[in-house]
Length: 271
Image (cartoon, rainbow, N blue to C red):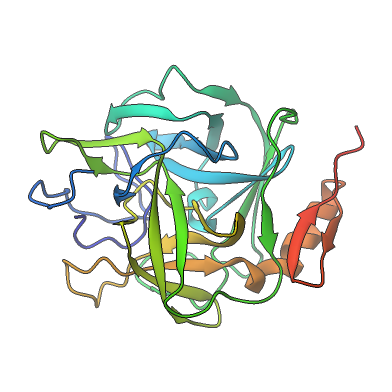
């Protein structure tokens, strides 16, 4: 497991001011999101490469817009969004060559976001958006929840490119993994989630929590007050930031439609 995680961005060789972490142990009973399994689906979920050789996860919600965690883009330059499944790589290594790179045009951070990695769960929206230079036409974007929350103890699917241990116990990342995760608590801005078949690790930040293939949250942080061995962690509630998401998307010439069920979709790009 990953001990003393303040946030879940995965720095490479260099330290990242917004995220403090200690080295992953190799004595976890889960050989390999830690636990779960390799994922070849969810093509909308990709890898965000950052400056200082850090990584996060993001999900395509429009042909040219990626949803991620606010702390992934706060004080960081997002270098590229890569789609594909990736391959297990050494932590801090180059992006997998089997992924397709997409250039970044712009990023936007929620206007109420605060830079305080010592606070978890975060009482403010930990959400950000990434604008791609060119739309991705061969992947159908994911819907996201504008209102409503999943029931307690219900299982969702978490997807990310964060750390895990291979069969030899070596730390690896940059391979897409998924696992079931259980909703343990619903808060105003976050969902407390506990381990199902796996739990999130650094590098999974910004990755989606999915219910019925709809994004309800993005990976945010782990509470330092929890025991080091705890697998509980927090996802930012997307519905909490929906008004800002709509406003920001409008500046990028996108409109959002919300169904009676509370599920939001971005209208197809007319270009």
